[in-house]
Length: 214
Image 1 (cartoon, rainbow, N blue to C red):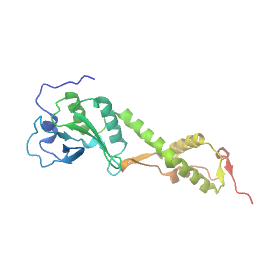
Image 2: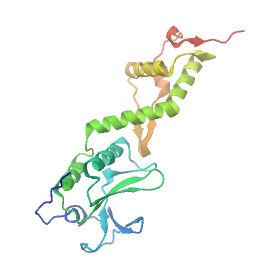
Image 3: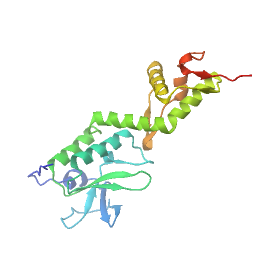
Image 4: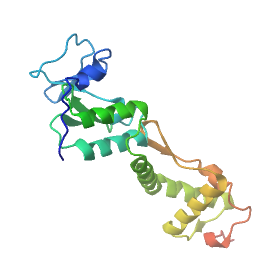
């Protein structure tokens, strides 16, 4: 990908860091250290990086699917750029760091746009949310949803396939206006009780119920 180096002298430091250095970091080995105390503009011998809060996520922060999508899309756009680094840490932390002396106009424009609207690509953001829902479906929603149906009708079991259950799950989402949400730290949640309330009082045959026998 060709990069567009702006002829202006303004860098990421000039535009984003002069008045607020809380998102400026210094590289020391493999570690990124906050340098909010930085008092002057770095030189080309220094290694300071800017981290946009909308290009960072982890398991214990306020991020959701938006930041995860942003990181993915940004790396697809600029991952090969020499001023761009992706940092991976503990507890699911990922962040993009950009050299504060970077003057690439496309990168700068992307960052400026993020501060006006914190999502690079709405379509990818929706896709990320769907991917996270699918992952949660496989890890716990399917099991919890099945258990909730069995409990509602006091059944021994149901013989519905996972694919059929997913179709029922989708139908109940529409019927009850209940949808999957990505909460802080990327944790997925859906109100299963509200979904189950959308089922009829008498167990429908399409659930293929197995009743207790005396």
